[in-house]
Length: 295
Image 1 (cartoon, rainbow, N blue to C red):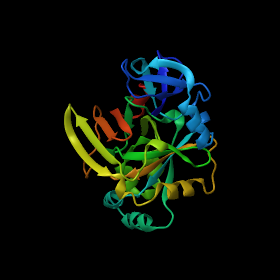
Image 2 (image 1 turned 135 degrees about the horizontal axis):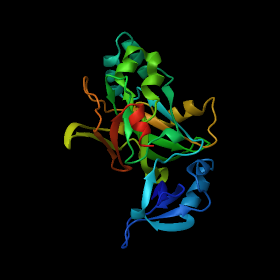
Image 3 (image 1 turned 90 degrees about the horizontal axis):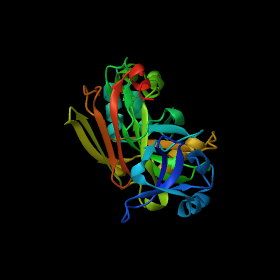
């Protein structure tokens, strides 16, 4: 089962359940009791399971539907940093004068959490992502994202591309919001795999391939088994002094970072795959004007 946000023929976005392909191909059935993902994530996990098991809406062929980013309404995207050894090493390397900060946060009791994106800004499968025009070095960051309801229960998992400017953040850690939060700086999808179908989120393979001119420019793989912070720990800190009435997507950090001086270029294609979840593919453009033209 996959929980999807989709539209047909350019119509209003709907929320639905994508089933496994049958003899006539895969179909999507809309959720009659939860037309928006934000509304669905406002419910208890037990009720979400009931609705997904009996969606009750209209059924369309998946081939006719356009998949959209699995986030809408007032749902926010948050992210965790320095949760893998590779991330700690990369951020210490890129930092000009503050390398020890990342070493300390990796071992600290409190994790690094930061706001990543409002729902409307998140790019879906096949949509362009952007690198900042004022960034010398920009990279994608492939991450497992936990989809949370308003109570902080893990409803499911999706893929998040936490785009990042290494050169801007490396100048000063206080520049993190500028390095991370901008138009075209976040993608998610292609859908949500329910948590009850993912028995071990710490046993997932993460793969990333960056294509340039049809050729592999960078490729790597890792596993969530190397995630130092438990997902429940990250959720606990996120909800400790805040509320999320429409739930949240919490991206859990990256373990795949291309070595310097690699940087994304316009025309690149980013392919992030977590076999148990799906594959998120996005082309790359550069600058605000270029990404705005794709909206």
